[in-house]
Amino acid sequence: MKSLIDILDLTTAEIDELISKANDIIDHPDRYAEKCRGKKLATLFFEPSTRTRLSFEAAMYELGGHVIGFSEASSSSTSKGESVQDTVRAVSCYADIIAMRHPKEGAPKVASMKASVPIINAGDGGHNHPTQTLTDLLTIQREKGRLNDLRIGFCGDLQFGRTVHSLISALSRYHNIHFTLISPAELKLPDYIKVDVLQKKKLDFEETAKLDQALPNLDILYMTRVQKERFFNEADYIRLKDSYILTPEKLKNAKSDLCIMHPLPRVNEISCAVDDDPRACYFHQVLNGKFIRMALILKLLEID
Ligand code: NCD
Image (cartoon, rainbow, N blue to C red):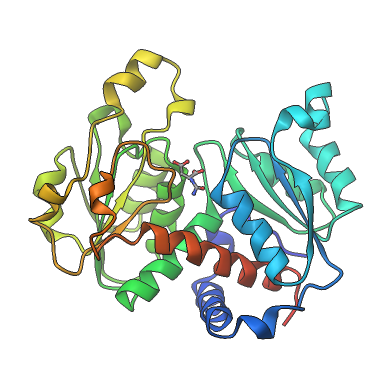
């Protein structure tokens, strides 16, 4: 029984297989409509979510399975003081697979040590978000036709943005990726990614606070929101929240085949006027998320 806690739990060959499977599901959804008949997915969301939880649920329904779960900690026995370990042991008695989001870093890992069914980390604090990364990789593959030879800029809250941390770890295994890390000084990428991944592997990266200067060289721009819920001090959030706002004006200097990504939710960092630009890929990303989660559920349940 395998869980997915960190994107590096999957080899690049396994990621390639998931991408191929997701593309096959996109082309032939009818072939997959009954694959999970009789199976149950539990979604245990101890933290707010729209896309991730609903895309897991839609994924399981489209595979013919069922979904149980909760969408906030206050409606679960956590509010009575139950530990994560006990919650997942109980839920393992009802479900075949569990998708779990938790505000504490490492909680899904701890859960996976106690559960008797596969656990999927659907986001743990400011740490990791492997299924968003699979979504992002499928999007990059579909939009750019490759996962190698790319110049990618990450812009916004690189300190707390877990989707950024997971995607950098994943891309660190591909060839000829140049990383441009665009953030205010206070929201730079944490050392456990910068030192332990980028520097250790001698990858090509630069840090800057200036989106305008970085933009013309990029193949992919990955925008993120400032993660309000991870700040200790509201004044800091207010000062930093509008550090970057992407507008059609700014995009005049970007490549004509730039791919603009965002894990969403967006707050203010991409103007709605950008949505009609053919380079805006963030709503394709949402749709891709459902298909790659279908592929992942099949893999972890060992259903061909
Ligand atoms: C992200 C998350 O929850 O980390 N959203 C998502 O899962 N699509 C990004 C965010 O909340 O900013």
